[in-house]
Image 1 (cartoon, rainbow, N blue to C red):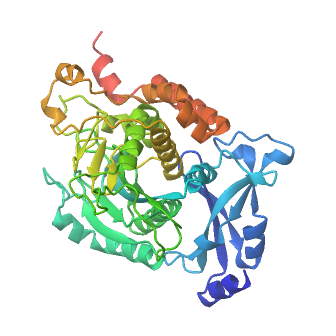
Image 2: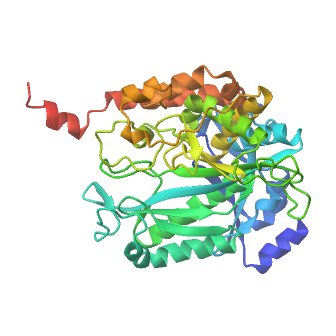
Length: 454
């Protein structure tokens, strides 16, 4: 700790940002003077437990305090906040790992993999919007970002190069590997693609990305938004995850780690004609089997289901999956299978990366432990088929509302066990309240349609 403190002093750091993630995937925390680094890493810093949404802690007694204990390896000076360093924290209550802390939930599922000598590596690809609010109306930050098909729009990339490059450089200086930066399929929408890393580090990096992106956007009078679908007539923001499972030490890049999802021939050579190994197919089958419950975590808001709609009368649905399918390099499938990995296309930009990753692992382990069989790949574009034709082929539809997804989560013992009874109950209860509030809300659409109609 003394060495770490000296390194931070040399970097001009005077204050630590102790950060944890709440049940909604929102970063929370407080500022701690650098002189108290030892306390943050050993004991932690205390928060009022009942004031944190979703943690269900009492207002008095030993369990009323939520302690955020810093992980030394995550300590990182923040170039977009000179003098400050971020420290990612795990939650503790009454000096024990807090079961409803999202990072602890992911750690529990990682431990299940580690007991088998395995670890998961992921890369997260978040899409986001740069917005402005004018007279109460949300609009793309740029008035000139108006192409009818804006995917890969170089003009907008050039116009926003200052913001995008500042964000890239900030993340790169923190050791985050940025592979690509792209313009999305909607006006004002962009995408960052990150390199593969151990699953916990990937989730930590996503939270670091969100922190930097918000602050840098504010500096340019823009709003960084990970709302899944802010515009009804344009595609929404996903947060695809590419997934592979490995043997060996997750923290040693020079060991004999082996990608367990790579298919091999009988002579031991890699079989590039088969996307996934037998183990990988079982893991993927588990993910498909629990897709309805996973929806509640990977698409956790009412707005999420504007992105996942299967209504083909809408001309611009984007690339979001709507059915429980897989296919080789298939951008319309729930799982796109690639050599030695798969791309999980369900999560949207509002998903909590820790809870989503934990539930993914639990579903995959269930597929392995029960030797689930991966269904046949679907090579067809389902948008060309009628609902009757899809049902006739036995292809399941993803939940089309948050309520349907919560119903599926309630009855899925595997995902319930992964989250733990406390967090699962809190998550479902909070989301039911969200549904009730939305049901009571009277929208502009309703007023325009009904106010003078009867």
